[in-house]
Length: 175
Image 1: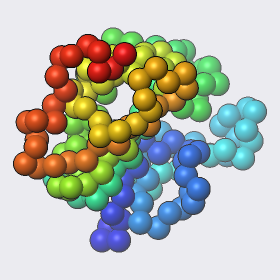
Image 2 (image 1 turned 90 degrees about the vertical axis):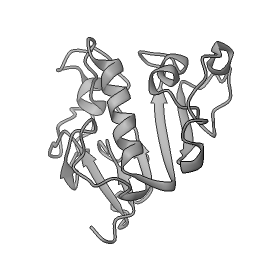
Image 3 (image 1 turned 120 degrees about the vertical axis):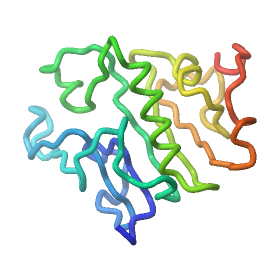
Image 4 (image 1 turned 45 degrees about the horizontal axis):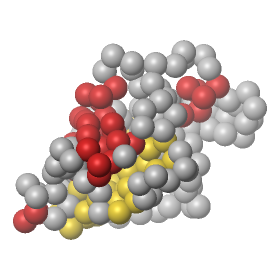
């Protein structure tokens, strides 16, 4: 693992990666499927380097320079549906706690001054609710009022600002 500086904590089938075998990245997911697991995408497969739950990762603190966190965006969808097979699904009862734990784990394994890239889609829950749940304010991302349902957020772990970086309860920030 010495040459792995980047962690993709929920890699899925690595759809947004230009190089799906990027050599400095450790690809993790809780699922694994062979080609053909999606009926309309026969070549799609899901083979992480490590099978791991993003809510509890077996890495020491500050292990990675960059963490990519693209958790499932669907909440409470049936297991057999195509979207759930493709992207995974969060439990309707525990999704808030799962997202919070996942973000905290990603933050824990991120080095000081490391970068966390967080991807979210408003398919089931809006970004304002998501940002309140994780409790941190991103450096930048899609602007408020964006009509695009997929949001990318960039966070940086500033150790001296750890307390200052927490999200304030100002509702207007996330609308």
